[in-house]
Amino acid sequence: MAPVTHQRTNSARELGEGPATVPSSAAPPASVRRIMRPLTGTVLVVVALTATIAALVFPVWSYADRAGTPPARLAAGSVPTRWGPLSAADRDFVVRVRLTGLWALPAAQQATGRAPSRAVEAAGRHLATDHTYLGVRVRDVAARLRLALPSRPTAEQRTWLDRLTEAQGRAYEELFATVLRRDHGTLFSVAAEIRATTRNTLVRALADDAVRLLLADLNALETSVS
Image 1 (tube, rainbow, N blue to C red):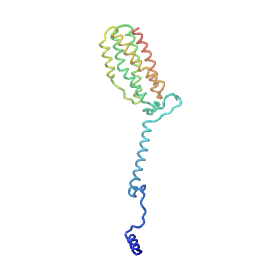
Image 2: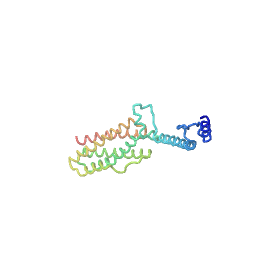
Image 3: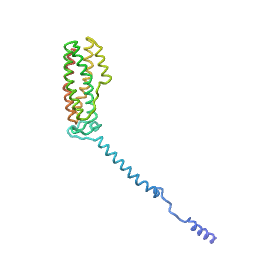
Image 4: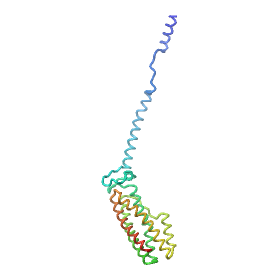
C-alpha cells in the first residue's frame, strides 16, 4: 500500500494539485481594480461639481436681523443680488404687482371716462394715479433685478375687464368696487408679508409703496359704493 500512496502523492505534485491559496471573493482581480480606480475618481469629481453648482444656484442665506422668518422660505429659490438675496416669493410679488396694474389701470381709466357717479369717478382717478406710479416703480425694479415681466393681463383679469365693459348703471358700480377690492385686497396681503420678510432692499421698497397705495385704493373703492 505504501508505494501506491507514494505514487499518488508524486502525481498530485506533478499535476499541480497540491495545497493552494483560494482567492478571496472580497478582492477583485487586478484588471478590475485598474478599471475601478479611474471610475471612482470620476464619480467623486462629478459629486463635488454637483454640490458646488447647487450651492451657487441655491444659496442658503442666514440673517440675524429677522430670525422669525423660516429658513426654508429664505432659501427657497434665492439668488444673490447687489441689493440682497432675491427669493422666489420676491419674484412672484414683483410679477403680481405688474399683473394687477395691467388690468386695474384700464379699469380705473374706464371708470373715469364713463363716470357713472362722482364717487366711482373719484375712485377711478385715484386708482389710475396710483397704478400709473406703481407701474413705473415695478418696471424699474424688474429692470434692475433683470426680471421678465408679463405684458398683458391674465385670462381671468381680461374676463373682469370684459364684464366691466358690459355692465351698466348700478350693476357696473358694484362690480367695479367688488372685483377691484377683492384683487387689491389679495395683493395687499402679499405686499404686507413681503415687506416684513424680504431681504432685498429694492423689493422691500416696492412692497412699502404697494402697501401704502393699495390701502388708499381700498379706502377709495369702499367709499365709491357707500
